[in-house]
Every structure is written in structure tokens, then in C-alpha cells.
Length: 232
Image 1: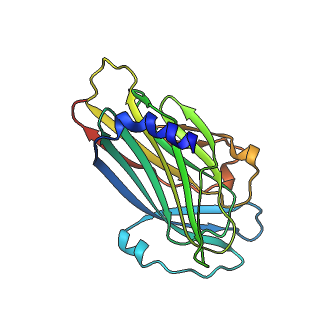
Image 2: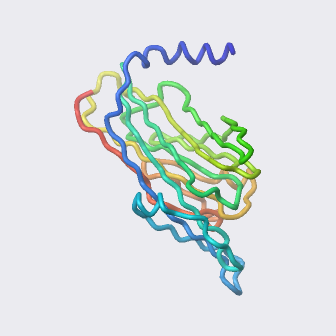
């Protein structure tokens, strides 16, 4: 409880005013297959329409198709009193069959820097109606991005969401910023990967970059990005 109160007081200067100034949502369909005579899983991602996403139904799996996933990724820039908040949120339309270490990132220009520690939240509900929240993650940082690596929950789930957000201020307090960009990226492990290997990634405004030794363990999507232009 003391930690929660301390964090609240740290955020108080930023929370007097809040307004979403820019937001973008992308929808994805990913098919992961294991072809005959191959030991390497291949994943192909398609950017789809909101209508196709909303109408998606649980697909059949077979000896070749490992899983088909549908996910929605939203990135938002919010104007606070003395800063801005960048938020990435991923919602799973269909719960993934493979549950290992996934990666989520927020990227931004070097003209801004985190004002407080970023926040990661994983929320999920079981089919029995019980819901849970986890903040457990491994954090990776750079001058133009933040990454969270975490394990997907096991069990028979009815919903699954991840949120990664950070409050930023100017890197140079005396500068005038006329443009901002926030990018959101997500890499889903299509096969089991160890904790130590899953840490082999970097983050930037361009999204998640995986080490060549783990590239085949993950699917790939195009980043969702949103921009803001004005005077700050």
C-alpha cells in the first residue's frame, strides 16, 4: 500500500488534466504453420479490417496450422498537465494456443524521456468468471523506446489484454517540441522459448528488433503509430 501511495504522489503533477490527442488502432490476423518435412514454424501476419476482426471465429487447427490469432493493437498519445502519456494496448480476439514469453514495446522520439517508471499490466479472465491482473515483466530500455517481456497466463481463458504505458516529459526542458510520435509493437511467441533467450531483443521508435537466434520463435506485425503536431 505504501508503494501505491508513493507512486500516486509522483504522478499528481501530471494528473490534473488529461485529454487524448491522437490515437490509432490496427487489426491483425496471424497464421502460424509447421510445414511437412520442416522443424521451423512459419508465421504470416495480415493487417485486416475492423469488420473482419469483429467477425472472426475460432478456426480449426490441423497438423500443419499451429494456431490462428486475431489481435487489436491501439496506441494513444494523451496530453496531461505538464507532460504526455504514451499508451499501447493489445486485445486478443482469440486466445492464443501457445503461451510463452511475449514482448510489447512503446517507441518515441529522443526529444522526450520517461518522467516515471513505465507501467505494464496484463489482465485476463478465466471461463469460470474469475479475473486477474499481473504487473510482472522484464523491462528493456533505450533512448527511443521501452520494451516489456512477460509470460502469457495458462488456463482456459475467456479474455486477455496487455497494456504498456509511460508518462514522458521533455529531454531538454528548455526546448520547444512541435511533433511527437508514439509507436506500439508486439511480438507473440509461436513456440516455447526460455526466459533468458526471450530477453534477446532491443526496442526503438521503429518497434521491436529480435536477435537472429530467436527470430523464428516469434510472429511479426507492423507497428501501430500515431503522431501529434503542435507546440509544447
